[in-house]
Image (cartoon, rainbow, N blue to C red; front, side):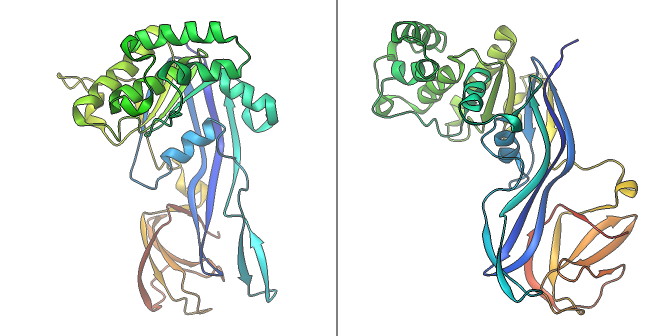
Length: 326
C-alpha cells in the first residue's frame, strides 16, 4: 500500500474582511480540515471560485504560510484606538514526505521545495530572455549542478515533451501549448516527488487542453509522480467512454462531518444585516445549525435562532463556516 506523501492536519484559514477601517466579517475558508494524499496519486482539486483551491495548493507547496500573514489597520471600538490585525490567520500542520513544512526556514526550506515539489501555473512564467533549454535547466543549476549536466537533463525532458525542435527558441516565438510544455519540463527537472498544477490549461485553446491533461496522466503513470491539479474543466479528466483518467477528486469547501459535535454552522451566501443590538452591519444568516437557521453578529456576538428583524443590506459575503457559541 502506498504511503501518504502529503498529510494535512486540522488546517484552518481565516480572512479578516474589512471595509475601510471597520472589521466587517471573519471569512473562514477552511475549518480544521484533514486531508491525505498517497504517493503516486493523481488528484484534481475542484470547487467554485473563491473556495480556496489555489490557497490550498500554495500552502501545500510552502508558497503561503499556515499562520498569520499580512496586517491591516482597523478602528477598535472597545479601546477607541486604531490597531493592526492580520489579513489572514490560521493553524494546522502540513507534512510533505513526513517533513513538517512549517518547521523549514530559509535556505533549507528553499532546497526542500526545489528538490521535492514542481510547480506549474496557469501562466507559464518563463523568463523571456532565456531559451527553452535555459528555462528548463535553471532549477537544476540553482541546486548547484553543472551547466553541462543541467543542459543534458533539460534536453532529455524537452525531447520527452515533443519539443526537441524548440530548445533554442525563446518564449516569444513558442505557442501557448509549447510554453506550457516547457513549464512542465522545468517543473520536472529535479525529479520532484510532487507536481502542483494550478489551472495549467486555463489559458490554453480548447484543442490544446486535452494534450496537456494526457501528458499529466502519462507522467503520473510512467514516472509515478504525485499530482495535485486545480481545475474548473472536469470534462477533460474523462475519456471518451466517460471513465475517470485520474484517481479521485477533492471538492472544496470541505465540511466537517459531525456538525452537532463541533458546533459548526455552515452555509453559503449570507445576507448582511444591521444588528438590532449593537448597530453593526454584519448580521449573518447561517444555514442548517442543528436543523435551525442561526443569525449571529460578529461584533457583539449576539446569536438569534429567529430572524432578529435587523435592517437588510443589499450586499452578500461568501462566509463558508462560522464557530458559534454553545
